[in-house]
Amino acid sequence: MKKLFFTIPILIATLTISCKTNKPNFKEPNTTNKELADSSIKNDTVRIANDDIEYEIIIIDPGFTGWLASTARPRGYYEQPYLEVKNRQWVTEWNIRAQNPLKYGNLYQMQIDYRPNIDYGYEVNYLLYNYLVYFQISNNQNFTGVVPQY
Image 1 (spheres, rainbow, N blue to C red):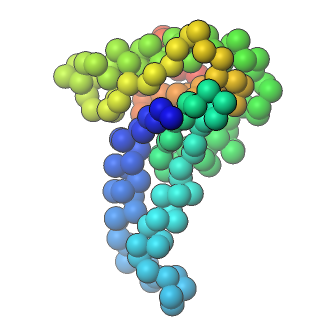
Image 2: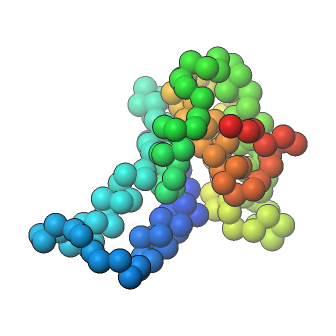
């Protein structure tokens, strides 16, 4: 099974979890800090997969799950062909940036293996599209001239 991990969001999640505040800790007495951290990372993990074609993307990015639930257009708003076209455009740009870290920095740690001749299904295309929208908005990036607005 192919797996792609977005490592910058992992770094962000790790930094967010490791930040300490002066607020009192109201956790359960039997809960350790490691268990809280694991729970936080698990809640910020989105698995995009189509098991029939053995394709999987795992996104660990604090904020994406909440953004998807509260801001993203609902499933069915876009047709699959539209999502596929946008994903092809944006993944191509993502991969160009991943290959040029001196020019684009380290936001793009890994390339995305998205092939136009494979039918990934609606759910994979929907979640990938929305992650790329979220990524552009939250990181002030612009893949194709117009950053989607929500």
